[in-house]
Length: 235
Image (cartoon, rainbow, N blue to C red; front, side):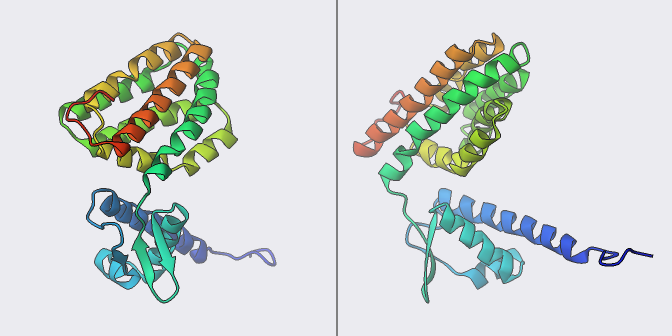
């Protein structure tokens, strides 16, 4: 017999978990559409239409749109619904100095922990090379972000990791690489010196290399957005 005040079963808890998963799935689909241009800047995103297309109720669709608004990917207005928010160039560029500072700390702390144990990073580099050879930007971004996430998590600093995740690095990286500032293969190889520093447990060098890598990419992006892109330009 259950104790007083204790519910014998938890169907509501299961429903909440299920709804959270649906929300994340809807958010992922909408992000993909926005990044690949299916839903262009200024285009309306109708909550009920999203729910119908994806076969879900309006609740997870509404929650997904709210999260996208917090990410500044969509903007919502009373009686007008949600629209895709065009990312201003400066909004994309300004994240790089912040990310560089965070990841410098992460790499400095993670390298001694991963010394001689950097195989997960090496695997991500190989996966980036394969994605670059296939010219698969989506897969490349997935492994690029995974490489950096390994370092962030290995730092052991949960506050840093939470802030880093809040930057939505996967989305920003996709938006950046869509500009094709240089060959994906070059971007993949740029991770090799960092991998070597981590493998050797050299935290200070790993931190410096990672900061330079991210800041350099940010500068290239700023220049690319300010001037017409040249085919094959080195990032």
